Amino acid sequence: MTNTQQMENLIIDSSVKTPQIDFNAEKGVLLFKGRSIPENSINFFKPLNDWINLYCEQPNNATTIEIKLEYFNTSSSKCLLDILRRFERVAQTGKDVVVKWFFETEDDDMEEAGEDYKAIIKLPFELIEVEEI
Image 1 (spheres, rainbow, N blue to C red):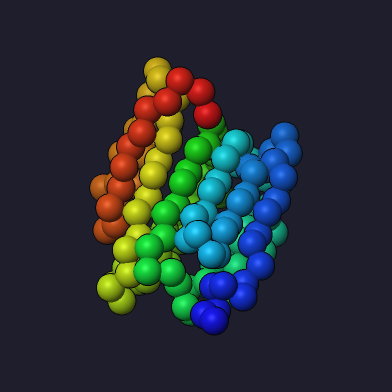
Image 2: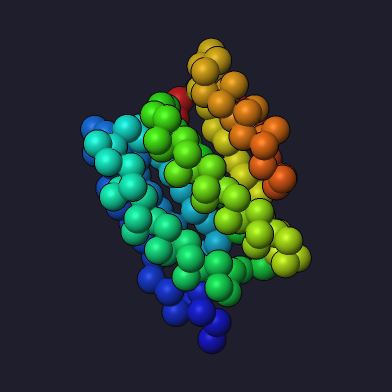
């Protein structure tokens, strides 16, 4: 049994200021959904980073990162970038990692943010337009 099969999933319900988190080790799917404007991004992202560190020790052959955020603040942006950079290193080991960036129709800011990440991150990056997040 591999490490990821033994790992517990990380599930955090969304709040007014924090996104829903659903990290599934067995499926290799990491979902961020909602708004990310926590009072303290470091505190909010710490359990996420701890889980990701453990996952990255023995990642699945394929990992999908789904980002379905309606809005995020600057400190959340930095934390997301750090997470995506960690997965760049996973991809360098020969594992498949894809980022799916969802944005609502006519939400130019979130579309542009996705394009910025796509330009920075060296991972397959899909921009996906949806009616509603």
